[in-house]
Image 1 (tube, rainbow, N blue to C red):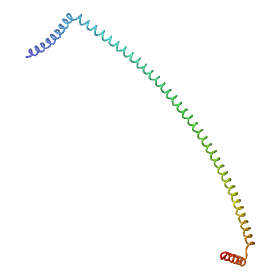
Image 2 (cartoon, one colour):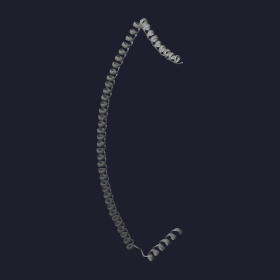
Image 3 (cartoon, rainbow, N blue to C red):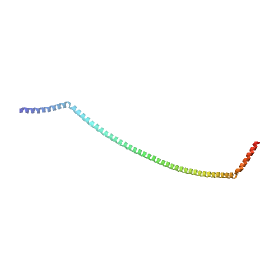
Length: 188
């Protein structure tokens, strides 16, 4: 049995040697049949890989340069926009300050005009009050004078009437005589 086991081990070792030699044989046959073509294909693959690697490196460098260029362009544009915004903001601030100054000046002018107008109205009101007072005083004087003149005339007429007053008895006699005379003239 031992001989069978050792034979089996020999067989296994022979078969693995045989398998290796068969693989080597197949490789040799393949190398003979396709060797030149395989080497050409491998050279082409190697050349293609190298070409792709070079192209990829060139693209990477070109992309990096374009990205750097784009980055520089964007930064310069941002700086330009920032300076434009800053100058526009300064211009707006200057314009607002100028408008504010003009408004303040106009407010001062309006306040001055209002003050002058108020003074003028006060002066006009005082002048009108003085004229009205003066006219009122003159009217009062004139009215007092006219009242005094009217009293004086009334007093004079009263005195004249008093001095020229006829006695009632005498007037009765004159009227009786006149009545008799009128009666006698009527009877005729």
